[in-house]
Every structure is written in C-alpha cells, then in structure tokens.
Amino acid sequence: MVPNLHLVDASEPEINEFLKLKINYHSTTGSLSYLSTATRPDVSYSVSALSPFLEQPGIQHLNSFLHVLRYLKGNSNIKLTYKKGVIKPLEEYSDAN
Image 1: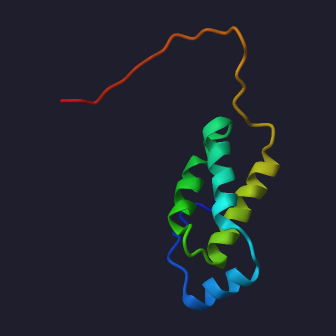
Image 2: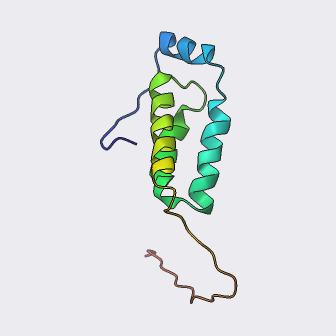
C-alpha cells in the first residue's frame, strides 16, 4: 500500500459504486490474508489495513487492494521457501512480567 495512506469508512455513494462492480471484496482480501500467512509476510500490514472494511468496502479500498496486487506482481521473486529436511532451532521470546 502507499506509505502513510489512511483508509477511512466509505461514503454511501462510494459503497454503491463499489457494489455495481460486483467484486467479492471479502474473498479477495481473504486470499491476500492466506498469502501473507503462507509465503508473503511482507503484505501482512496491508492485509490488516484492508480487513476492517470487509462489510462495506468502497472504491478507495479496492484501489488499495489493487495496489497490493501490483506490488505482488512486480515483486514475485520475493517469497518464503520452506525446504524439506532443514532443521532450524526454535527461538522463543516472551514479554511477560
């Protein structure tokens, strides 16, 4: 997403304009969430910024979603790769009093 972009609730006309596009925003954002969990943690912040608007998304949310898709396409060589048989020691941290 664009740095320092602050997403806000969509206005009624913006919601209606989005609904005319017949895009399943919930499903598309869910797909991004899966990617951020499985192989692309670099988009986790963007997914968490888009998720609060699942119920009533507007055009600004769609544009931000498309921006994330363009980022993923342009940086398709960046990913987590899990190799079979590689054992890494598990490190744990806690901030408890």
